[in-house]
Length: 240
Image (cartoon, rainbow, N blue to C red; front, side, top):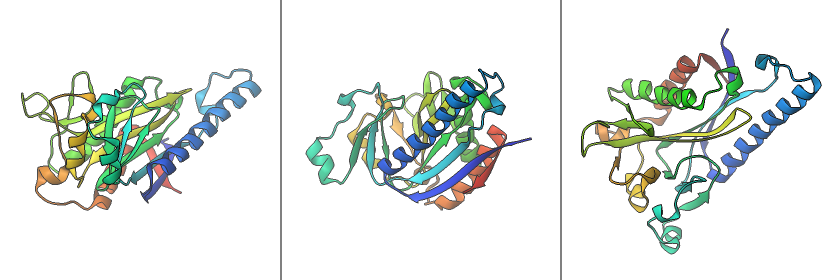
């Protein structure tokens, strides 16, 4: 029997608003775990704990986010120039370094209880990558993994041609996840010129639009991605 994941398509929404929502959902789930296990004297059956999985999809206005271990010097634009361009900035509590979110980019935030799946962050990240790889394949693009570098790439093994099309960074507390992935669909890639994307020097970024030579319907990509998420994680998405 497939587990149920509550799905929300948030449309276009600010980074702060969605970060706050993620934190609320994560705290609700972690509090449930603590209280339930106190009441049940430390039950070892994770399926008995009434946590709720969530999956949020959203597009953000232009924003740079720097992970907890990221380096400030990977922001190449001055604060004054950034503000003039209308780009927000947040230093946040996920793994990874600096990245950009903006219009035309599909950002996914799974809030999952991994104790009901597999308590292995490597498995979780590889599963997220697989969702993206399958979605790209639906459009004839060959997404691949790059050894030692989280995310999904095009031509990662071809010298001078590797380019990242989907960045990833997560936080996990009591095996509840938050943050997630950012897939470049029709993204304006010029925003990446002002940062060292993911802290990786000398590698480019890509978008589905640029690779395919045409703009895509974001809603269509969402539909395919949702189906692939259900397939990879063996879940059923239920719209709220």
